[in-house]
Image (cartoon, rainbow over all chains, first blue to last red):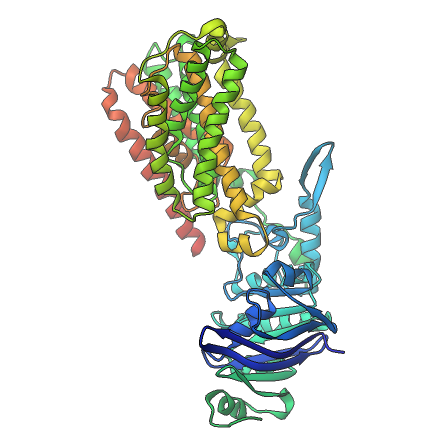
Length: 246
Length: 331
């Protein structure tokens, strides 16, 4: 069974072909490293899966059901969550508020409905424990380390019980120690049975956590193979075009 | 070795006192109290019932609108049109009452006019994507001009059959306290709860903190912004009605330059012009400090022309404190 199956996905922007006949499959609990140079079509592919764009051709299936996303909310409803490069967090709010932003639990006092903060803190503490991240629900995100911020962003995806998590360059701008923390978080998500698509430029990170690696070059899928049977040298060759396909 | 649940469960060990002292509101409040104490000793006229009554009433108008402004500023916006909304609302109620309509109907119509101003601001900002500064600057001009058109730029001091009721509502007192103060107290209590405990309040601060993130989580950012500008206009409309009753006459220069005092009150009270921070109580304390300074200049015989200098300095100091705090927490 495949969790996500893309078949024959193409995307044209006017005369430009951003993606050409891309077919990919991800199993539940699998981590896919999506690699490619700038402009290779990684972001376009992610945006199609996340519901920002509709593909010009091809179809997307989730758990073998054909889906058609018109807007990001549609994708969210079908269990796709995106962890953005900038994490999309509100620095001025607490970790718990960020985890629950847009879906705060409410408690009723007669006709008045107020946010259930105790419930939010309790649940976020559970999520952070699940991620093994030392993040306190009451702390403001402004005061947090890069790794803790990642944990907050990733806890959001746990909360929504996502099936597929798309992570856009999660390790691009953080310290070495925090990179290790984030890679641990990716493994935790996988252990929960989620499928993770990791978009990254950093070869060591992709090789550290991914089960499979897919390489895009000029809108075409040039490789899709098990990480164990590939090597950083091969992937570099595939990205630059020194190796035609694998 | 501590396990992870303990670390997560640990709250920051800070005493209630140190938390309070971290709030700008606290220091502004102390400044206002010190100013009051100094004036009590320096002058015979400050601590009189008459003067305190006036201070309480005067600051209530600015404070009312500053609560609305705090919502706007906390969401990362600004509303320059509140002064003009005050005069539009005051003019609508006085023209209608002069024409023989009852107080309640006229008051509702005045609020409807104010809400319409806020709705137009909000739609242009949220849907047309125009900068709040520009939209509300345009509205500053439009709303005052409409008030002039409505009244033919004449002063109105006859308010028809409900004349006395209007003067009682805006200028009267119950149990020794001026009525605007009751309205302000109710508004502050309600809004403090709303800011903290409702989704609307949470989203106002989320938009001010990171609008893009708020949008990605599915928060209806556009409609929320419209409601925020409508709320700000509502407080201005409310102040307009009360000011009409307090002054007993309405001219088209009512509320002129009031937006600056209101923004100053909100900022001094801890609203962050970059968005994401602010409290209803802070807005009131900021307004209180400004009024106490204004009052003290008069009582001490200093030219009131100095007022602007003092308020300007306070704004800069307030923002300066914020910078220092931010630098310290960044370390």
